[in-house]
Length: 104
Image (tube, rainbow, N blue to C red; front, side, top):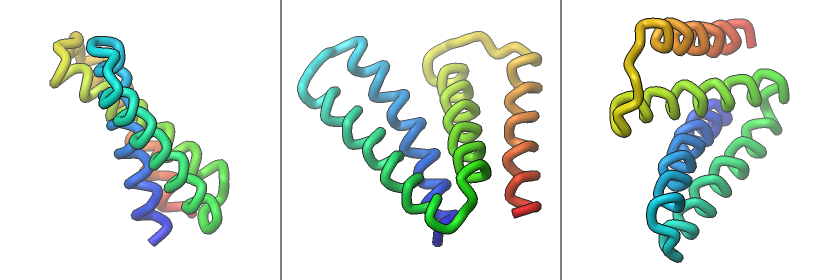
């Protein structure tokens, strides 16, 4: 269950990035509410996961998911450059996350 919470925390982190973009564009109450709920959920789920998974592993996986997810979202949804170097380094982050899961 703690790994599911950690994955959900990473997904909420990516939603937080979407919310940040929305706040930058619209600055409405709904945008701020979306930002607060997504990042708040991310932190709550991360806190829960850290009760069962070591802090270093949980934080590394959470930040890796957030970084990779945000970069991929930027490339595919917001038109950021799709260079092979970016994809290569994202794959390194994902390989590291998988490696941490395998040794934990």
